[in-house]
Length: 147
Image (cartoon, rainbow, N blue to C red; front, side, top):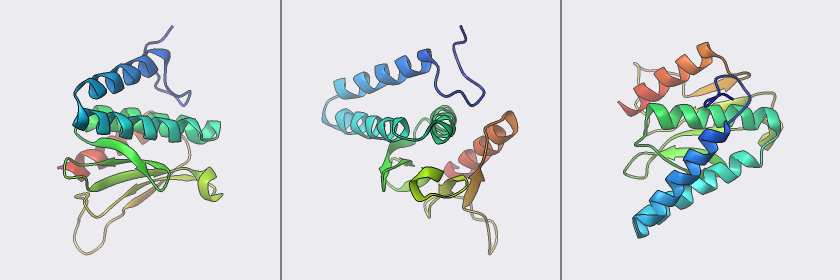
């Protein structure tokens, strides 16, 4: 059995167990940790409610953001999984296609993301399928956003 998932199958059992363990660790830290744990649980619950195709993408996005920028804190924003910096400013959110009946999900960066590039730059990216190439682009965008 694989310990991690690289396709679009969603979280592996090991990844789910690790997230539950991390939430318990955060709750054990006290009030501040409890808030972080609540944000993580809210994001995971929002992902769990998605249609299978959206859920698989959201799970990969979540795992990639957690691995790439562990200082970003998960929460929900308008019912969507989102990630904030230590100051509580929203950096990025995953908008699933099923939420608004669109043909693709999007990864949307907000004002606090450091993507500035001259007078015009992209802040929203359509996600149709997860692949190694997509993961590489998401990693690059997240690294840039938090740099």
